[in-house]
Length: 132
Image (cartoon, rainbow, N blue to C red; front, side):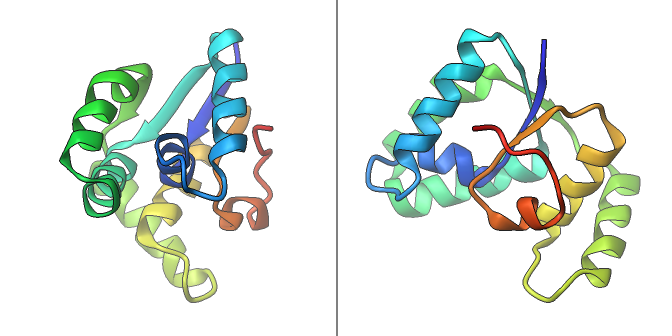
């Protein structure tokens, strides 16, 4: 069973039919579901995802995400150590990489992650294997 990190970019694209990555996100998500992959994310990604969905798609979409998608995710709650390591990494990386992404990079490296389900190119630039 593969372990897949899921980023906000993929989660939003999955929910938004108007997002440029929607078709790819739906296809990849279906493959991961059929393969019964373990879908991992961090609490930082959840906060970012809920905020993005609320701002761009509204409350009904937040409810749908919470009911239909969030229960499929294994969430790692970010504590002080992971937060600080992510912040240190963010300060080393090129400008524009968010704290959420930097924490994700640390999390991915710390855990046995087989693939990354993300539409954010920063994950590619870091050399993580993309879920296709």
